[in-house]
Image (cartoon, rainbow, N blue to C red; front, side, top):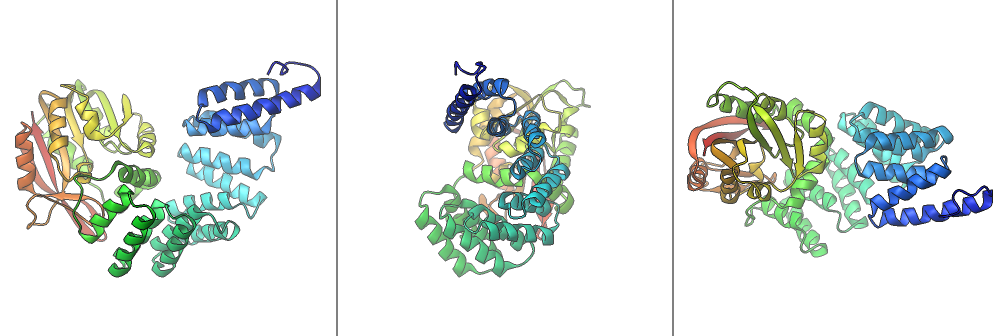
Length: 443
């Protein structure tokens, strides 16, 4: 590195290339701070070193420093405007910033420069599918698969689009090809099994679970999904990996899907129930949004909050919640463990559509009680179990439903006092109303 400042061109080039090799190795080892220092030193001596600009941009993107990543990649485009990879990478960054229209333009530019650029075609398909332009999305995914036939993720995305378009046999074939290419591709196995279950091809689904677990015997998502779909003994709650994967994948279209297509009501129902037992909001309380997702409850709770904290297991959801700009703090954590770390910290804990990923409610409700101040309130939604269910059940869609009697017993054991326990329609799904409970208790 001592030669970076020398005036002889040849030694500078060699030293910079050597330095870049070291920086890239550090980056690949996850030593991001050290890699960044070296990337910055290289660019100080060689501002147009394209590989450094590229990987430094990738590093910033990994750390969700999207503005910095965009500036770095734009410098590549300025120096090399025909660089299709740079346009594709800029699209990825802009997508992370939720600038989907601009991201789409970047992907289209990359494809215009290089019509067989499979990653850009795949990324374009993702954007098109998110805005329900399914014919165009299928065309983009199909071209991506044609140019990169051995890429399992591209097959998986194609399969998802085929399923959403109602082309079930074609979707099953695409999912099968994806798991042939990558035998531990959780998303493809999950998509394949769900598609077969929904098509009522239960014998095939049973064989798929057997094949999945043969390839990946300890996969918690496989075991959980098998229990949900085939009615086997259910675990006490959804595995962290299942929740993270499900919601990370849904983050980009979550609000539109829930509010626009499913008529999702839980946040408003919960805040209305809280308003019935709380004094008028004065912005003086410590409030926790437990399982905050993209932040749909945030603006409704902000009126009550001196301090509003959101916690969620999904990093993708937290990125979207940050954009709502109402939270004082956002944390990634498993809910029960997070609550156990607190004692008397909050006046209000609200949990919308989160406890439906818990079967046994005892640990999480006990932890919530300990995390509340005396006189504090816990408000949450649950899906309603079938009348013959005594405690709780795991449904094929992967969420738990609970009986009223069981829920009341658990809350009583945790030391809560009932305030309201109401039946409600939480959302519509598959053309049917999803019945639930809206519960408010005090401690």
